[in-house]
Length: 155
Ligand code: MN
Image 1 (spheres, rainbow, N blue to C red):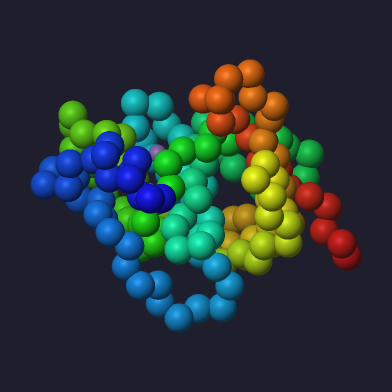
Image 2 (image 1 turned 45 degrees about the vertical axis):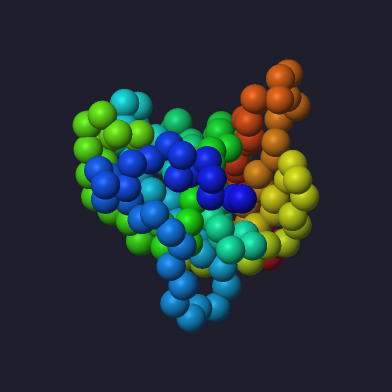
C-alpha cells in the first residue's frame, strides 16, 4: 500500500493537497519535479515517478545544478501521481504546513534502479543531465539519508 503513509499524515478536509493519484497526461518519459516547500524549515522536495507513485526525497539545501555538489536527500513518503502539479498553502496545524510551489519540472529517464541507488537522466529547466541518488549506510532502520548529485555527462 504505497500511499498509506501519505494518507495517514494528512486530513484531506483541511489540506488542499491531492488525496488520490490522478491519471498522468500523456508524455514522453517519467515525471520529474522539485517543489520548493516553505514548511517549518525551507526545503526542496524531489519527486520521481516510479511504478505508479512519486518516490520522494526532501533536500534541506538547494538542489545541485553543477557537478561536484552533493546534497543530502532524506527519503520521505511516496506521493500520489498528480502531486507534481500541486502548488498552494498547506494550512497551519496540518502536516507540512506552509507554501508549496513548483521549483523545477520535466521528465526523466531511469538508467539504473536499485533499492539503494538511482541513476537518472533529468530533463528539467533548472536540472538537466545525469544525476545520482545513493542511499547512505543506515545505522538504524529509520535512517533514510541519501546523497543527490550531478554526474559527468558522457559527452
Ligand atoms: Mn516537503
